[in-house]
Length: 207
Image (cartoon, rainbow, N blue to C red; front, top):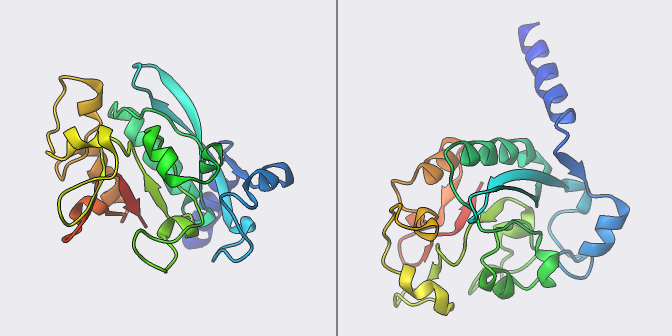
């Protein structure tokens, strides 16, 4: 009986989470042919839009939409609540459609995003982003670093040396293994690209 009541509580909490929305017909039209194609490994019914509150680089609170798999939508909402609680700054949050599905452009704009049906870097396999189970946060301050120690984004070069301190809002956004933000994701069972061996993807978290 207790287990049943607990499950009812979880389901009710999920359904009442006003910041979690279905992909409706209008939004689907914005995604199709850009962030979403028919051959994608998940359907639009599998995805949810999570409207999250975050602390911007202007030290003000903002709201942004992040598209993720339905199975982790409530969890993502909770993670961003915790990021806000520790005052972790995020420059901006827009779905990838704003950038016509172009991951490079999104990174150049230092945009935090999640779902994008695309192949993984240097692979023919679908990225975790294609399943709605990966999030890239502050990608300029937390770059993808190749085996040779370089990055594709010139504004990220100064962040190849990983130093987290409070002398600027940008440096507060730098993620290291000791960052509270990294520990929040790991608490929920997410993996961090900063722990990868041959390459590093400091912006990347996946479930």
